[in-house]
Length: 431
Image (tube, rainbow, N blue to C red; front, side, top):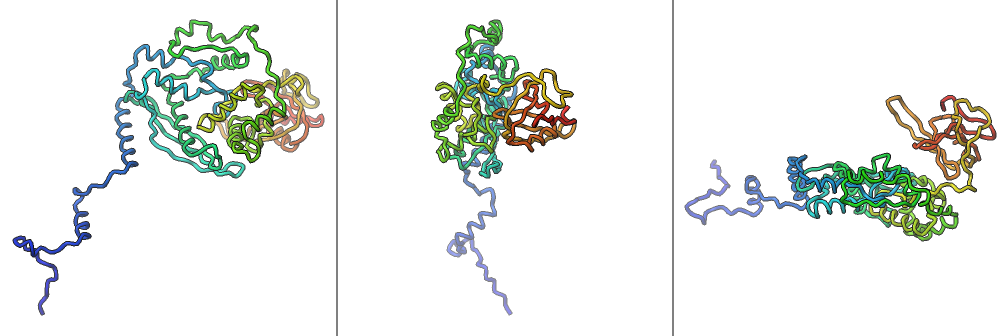
């Protein structure tokens, strides 16, 4: 029996006898020769490769950036007071610098095109708010490159709310990149005055009294230090007229002007702004906004609207003006003795009476062990306590009128005792 070879035999001497090769066979054959494969480069891959190449080159030149004495003086010169706003990290006693001033400074000193904030990666963490709304926390890792040299890197973040018509995902990405830029600029000493306690105290004094301190963008710090130390103690004669305390009618007007009425187009973003600014809890509404955060003048209203617009575009939730002090006719703190148990209470403790509106609890662990911090909102003011006895008593008496004894420091108001119907609730863990 003879076996027949079904495979065609190629005769190189006669091209007509060469076996036919189908297109798919050519594709399979060519796949066996990797050196001949040319995969088209995608835009995404090109960006990844470019950023990787730039990162390596910039890292190689880290700490080699050469600046003239004039450039150093200009980059580190202090900013004017109006460059800062209260409300950093949602805390009304902290201030932060607006990103536009940082970008202006970089452009003025290095010229546009000679510096860049380069995003290297971006990711998001989905979560659900306490109100049950979907949200994402967007992160951007970026590095600051100046004249081809690596200067700093940081991770910025911003929260994104899909149900918020005033904000889109691009706003959140831009805000996170801006947060990274703000952190990178600290490495060059840009705007470091916001992290200096004495300067911040002077800023708050000038903010309350209406005094302005001009700062030339290119004035070296050494020359400014020879001046009057920022005039942190303003003369009494320069104090402006006291702004009247806001009313519920002004609060309602504010909500209407901001188009934040229930169902209004800006309701969610305005509410989220005041939550992030620390003015209300995320379980409270705009109609419960404490009066000290309500604008009392048109200038304050414009400042507030500007801050909210910036927040919607990625800025931090900074307050446009300092919270109003409590008026004389409102329940005010006074030095007094409380009935009942007073052992361990500071002699200069103040008393405050009002209805408990909210009670919160934060727990954590430090080197000394676990801790629990209670937040107690009475009327429109917040107090805190590490005493479980006082915290639980506040929870039990939520909605009731109570009297508290408290001490006040730069960190806040600490409850020393809570008195219900003349009975002290101070427990052994409060000392």
